[in-house]
Amino acid sequence: MNTTHLTSSNDNIICTRNLAVTKGDQVICRAPDFTVSRGERIGIIGPNGSGKSTLFRVLAQLDCEFTGECQVTVEPRERVYVHQSPYLFSGSVLDNITYGLTARSIPQTQRRKMALQRLEQMEMADFANRNVKQLSGGEQRRVAIARACVLEPKLLLLDEPLADLDPAGVHAVQKTLAGLVNSTILITAPISLPFNFVQRCIELG
Amino acid sequence: MIRDGIIDALKLLGRLDTSVIDAALRSLWISTLAVTAASLAGVAIGLLLARKPVPGRAVLVVLFRIGMSVPTVLIGLLCYAILSRRGPFGQYELLYTTWAIVIGEFFLALPIVTTWTHGAIMRLDPRVSETAYTLGARPIQRTLTYLNEARLAIVLAVLTAFARCFTELGIAMMVGGNIRGRTRTLTTATALETAQGEFARGMAMSFVLLLLAMGVTLVIAWFSRSGQESAS
Image 1 (tube, one colour):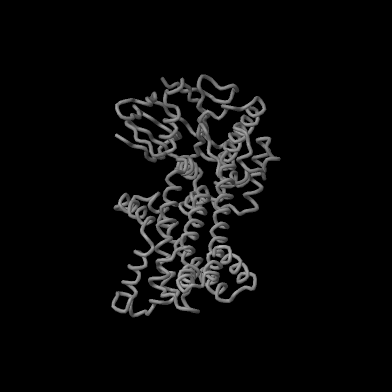
Image 2 (cartoon, rainbow over the protein chains, first blue to last red):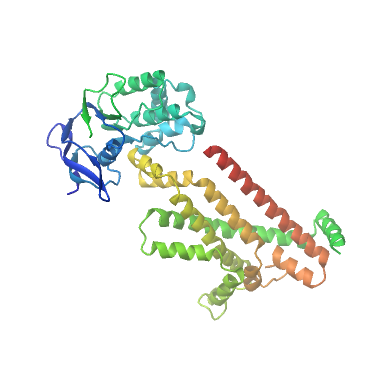
């Protein structure tokens, strides 16, 4: 069975049952049955290879075959997934932050204003016009998170967002995420998160 | 003989000999027109083959690859067959006009641009399409993103196609006819002048070809270097 589909019956925006992803003969992700309500902040924890990224690919509808049930009631355009190693498009930091806003047909002046606000929140206001190739790994990750957060998506999937970040970077990400009051946020982490942000954790074997 | 030829050639170039300049300008606009049209079509076809499940895609990709190594005289011969009076497009009387050379060079440039664009899009990091999708980009924005991320390889393909068209002889000779003041290009003029014993004039034409080939090579090298620097 392969049933990611939309329902709108209650406040649960994610509901999985017997969800598993196999590659060849090997099960690369077996998730416990879980539900996520609107506005919840969930940590997905588990050791390397437990299938955290694969679970996110299923939830983000990124060409991932699975068995079991996975119901996500959020429209694909309202789900934003930030990869474990995020990809930044060629160009400036500002070009990247405004990318999703352009897709939503937001006027240019407003796009710029929203992007700069989010960069300031991420403590990267001085980086707006810098080429993304000149950024460090941690800075690139913060730009990718800001690029996702500026869209204020209904479902935000952050795959190990704190890897490579120094304490200041962790603080900036925490501050930015705290500003997303209407978003449901799922964060993966190997063991636990270094800040008290998530309400509960789901553990993958 | 070569030394005298070089000196005479420099004199001809120095006083802007009209036959040399005429052939150079004609070669330039024919190649520019052919490569522009081939680039528009080739980039679109390359993108389509890389991103969409086109029926017979694998066969088409192989055919375009083969097309890169087809001799120019063969392209010229095929163009001659379709443009000659008894050919399917004979009624348009394009044979022995510059348009015939443009058409031939279009088919010379098309496989180069198509194959390189296809390869460049296929080699893109899979996160490019996933990131564009998850940020809600519409198909047209996603397409522009792919082209932007692969722009270096595409520019190199266009430059390579231009260099190939500008320096080719077979097509211009077969369907252009080397008519003075009408279809004579740098390569056909070089061949003719040398055959007629006008070695200096042939040398002068070759110099212009060489200068342009070197110019294009330098631009390609610059693009390759800047691409490597931005990737590192």
